[in-house]
Amino acid sequence: MAATEKERSGSESGRGATWGVTLLKFSLVAAVIVLLNIGVSWAIERIEMQVWPSHLEIVDRVVLAGVVLYMILMVLPFVPGVELGLAFMMLLGPQGVVLIYICTLIALAVSFGLGRFFPAHLLASFLRWLHLTRAEALLRSFDATTPERRLEFLVEHAPTRAVSTLLKRRYLLLALLLNLPGNTVIGGGGGIAMMAGMCRLYSFPKYLLLIAVAILPGPLLVVFSNLVY
Amino acid sequence: MPASLRAMLVIGSLSAAVATSSAAEVPSPAADSLDGLRFTGQAGEKGKGDHHKDTIMFTNGLFRALNCENWGFGAGRYTVEKKGDAYHFKATLMSPDRGKLEWTGEIVGDRANATFRWTHERWYRTIIRDYWFEGARQAGTR
Image (cartoon, rainbow over all chains, first blue to last red; front, side, top):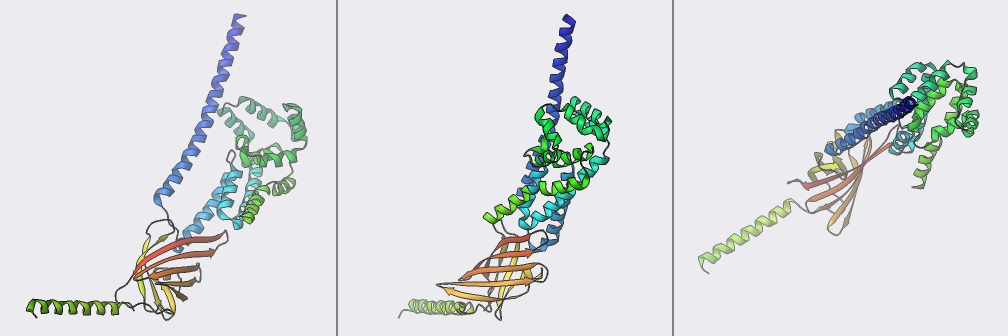
C-alpha cells in the first residue's frame, strides 16, 4: 500500500518535472525568437539605414530574399505564418497582397507534400524530445493505422464529442485551424498543413482548393484596410 | 577738414563700393527664372541625417541634381513662383529605369531648402521614399 502511494507520488513528481522541462524548452525557443527580433530591430535603428535610388538592386534582392525566407518559414511548423504574412502584406502594400497570397498557397502546398513524405517516426522523436509523450504515442499509433482507418481512429481518440464532430467535418476544421489566431502553438500554418498531408485524410486537389479560399481573409483584410485608410 | 576725417570718409566710401560690388556678384533671381543658380549642400532621407553631398543647379529652364544624374535622373523642366522673398520651384526628374524624382523647393537669399520624393513602380510594390536637401548658393553663380 505504502509502496503504491510512493510510486504514485514519484510518478506525479516525475510528470511535474517533465512538464517543467517542456515549458523550459518552449520558453527557450520563444526567447530566442524574441531576442532575434529585438536584436535585428536594434541593429536597423543603429545603422539608420537610408534607401536611395542607387540601392534599387539591393532593395529588389532584399525583397526577393524576404519572400523566399517567408515561404521557407511558412513551410516550417511552429512558425507564426499568418502573422508573418500579414506583416509582409502591410509592408508591401496592395501589390504585395497578391504576391504573399500566392507564396502562402505554394508554401502550404509544399508543407502538405512534405507531410505526405515526411517519416512520422522523426516527428514522433521530436515530440519525445519535447517530452510530449502522449502526443508521441498517439502519433505512433496513428501512423501504424491504415489510411482508410485513420479518420475512424481520430474520432475514437477524440477527447470530446465536439472534437469528434469537427473531425467528421475535417475540411471545415482545417480552414478554421489555418485562420485561428495564435495557431502557432498547434503547429502554425506550416505545421497544420504538414499534419494534413501526413494524416492522408485529404485529397491534394480538394486541399489546394480549400486553402485557396481559407487563406483569403488575411489578404482581404489588408486590401480593405488599405481602401479605408 | 582734418586729415583723419578725410581718411575715414575715403575708407567709408571704399567699403560701400566693395559691398555694392559683392551684391552685384550674387544678384536675386528673376521672378520667372532661376537660371544660373547653383546650390551645394547635404541631402538625406526624411527624418534622418546627412547622407551625401549634392549639388542642384538651374540651367536653360532645366533643373539638375548632379548626384541624382549618377542614377540616371536627367535634367527636368522647372517652374518657379515668387512669394515674398522666397522663390518656390518644382521639377520632376525622370530616369529610364529608376522611376521619377519630384522636387519641391524654396530659395530664400543664398539658401535652398528642398524636399524630393522618389517614386518607382516595382513588381512587388511601388517604392515611395522622401528626402531632403539643404544647400547654400555657390559663389560666382548667376
